[in-house]
Image (cartoon, rainbow, N blue to C red; front, side, top):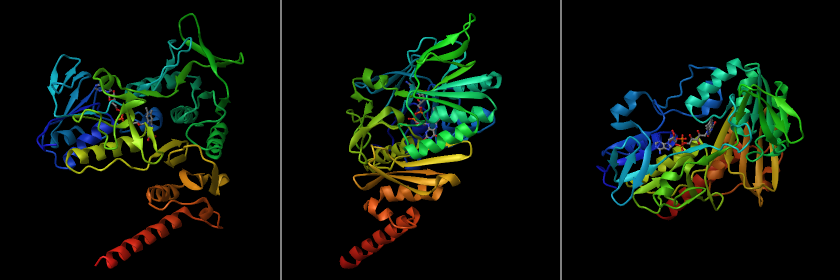
Length: 424
Ligand SMILES: Cc1cc2nc3c(=O)[nH]c(=O)nc-3n(C[C@H](O)[C@H](O)[C@H](O)COP(=O)(O)OP(=O)(O)OC[C@H]3O[C@@H](n4cnc5c(N)ncnc54)[C@H](O)[C@@H]3O)c2cc1C
């Protein structure tokens, strides 16, 4: 792409912000226009279900306004309504049109709203944006009984915040353990125990039939399929998100579980790319097409795309990683769960610090580290290395992931030196 080209970015979240910032780092000189439909400066979402709920002064803006001014990143508060690929223009909902040489779709995802009777009652909320979190914070201060539908990351994080605030909390989940789609039984069990120890009730393996309300339209409880009712004057629904793909599909781009992109994050139109929560990409770690919802993925895809647009194309191959914080526990996950067939635990869960290693076909695929940041850092290096870690190698007394990663790095360096010497 010409360094003077105009790059328009639809969506000023984590990915949109990062692609704008990285374009400037890579020396792009042309106009960069970052269009977002949320008010205020671009911000990070992770604190919304954690500290920000309890501490209103938590700083969440990614950068101050001066950052954008100094780098000539034009921030536009508007919604992109449509894309005209034949003339390379986007139309905003205020009627204005903007020309682009390259368009980045970084439109993220929005919450799924389950079709449950009573979902529109007063006191039933979801959380995706800063405005949602501010509303929830205000509601929490007045709530006595909170029910959370969905024991995924966000549901469990909100449960931890509510327990800290002394609110009677019940988490309702159709599956039989929390975060079941993302973590192993061992990690799930540890997290469940943490919550129970703080007084939270986990209603697992139960489905919601409807939400019940009083004559004023305020929620009073959640009726479950077994006929029981969980009393609640506040209900948080956290049952996952759907990618925001309509700009792409309306413009005739290929859409599956997200906007379909290639290994370089390009769509079928050479002038349009997509990154972050809205993009479905070929994942070299699983051999499947994947859509990920994480900061790592949005940031690394943005960097990869900015490098390509400024003349250094490399396929997107970053090792996925995730984290969650609940009470004083930090869970960090490296790799992507693809149905493991073996596992081992390093450390002792009773101490509150351990790692679960998951294997598929004898090879390490995922490491879940609970209050074990050194293992997490090592896991990311191990999973990115050319040489896989085999299950048999971990079956020795005192096996350490950190030491294995260090030895592997030394071996790789020695092999490179040998190649250098022999080619002299
Ligand atoms: C409460 C919460 C907690 C989270 N915690 C973690 C965590 O601990 N760790 C982690 O890794 N991930 C976490 N995530 C997920 C992480 O925040 C997302 O994966 C990440 O923000 C994705 O970045 P993105 O740029 O793809 O999308 P987003 O950050 O969602 O940004 C997309 C932006 O585009 C805007 N937009 C959409 N359509 C248009 C349009 N047509 N015109 C203009 N603007 C538009 C949206 O309003 C939004 O502002 C959390 C998410 C939430 C909601």
